[in-house]
Amino acid sequence: MFRRSLLSFALVLSFGLAGAQTAASAAAAAAMLSVTIDEAKIARIPDGTVTLVIGNPIVADVTMLKGSGAMVVTGKGFGETNLIALDGQGNVLDEKTIRVVPTGSVLIVQRGMERESYSCTPQCMPTVQLGDGKQFTDASGQITARNGFLQSTQSVQTPH
Image (cartoon, rainbow, N blue to C red):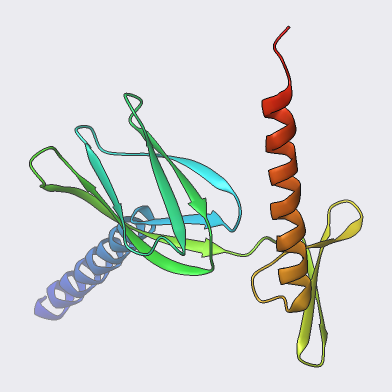
């Protein structure tokens, strides 16, 4: 009888611990926000949030959407950082880890010490990714020049 009670207690304890571990993993998953590099994601923020603080703005950027209870998180660099939501008195309402992950549709070609990236959706075309060598600096300069050109032409247009 004692042995049966002890076995029952052990089974209940074992299931209880498994349930606690599952709850702990669910809480850890809820505290993790994953975003793809160079993409934005909408996420909820706690009611009463007045300020959002990002630990490392090189990894991710965050913008609060006023009055909507949401924020936009943009992946800027690979890695992890933290995000803290504060109320008007500076009390912590929530804290999350933001993980920035690579996109799955990039082909990386390594040639000795040089690396080139290609976006392959639907055809493979050169793209700029962190870690690329000369292609990265050349392409980023071209993108900056193009964006500057587009801004100057948009300011010249007259409304109809």
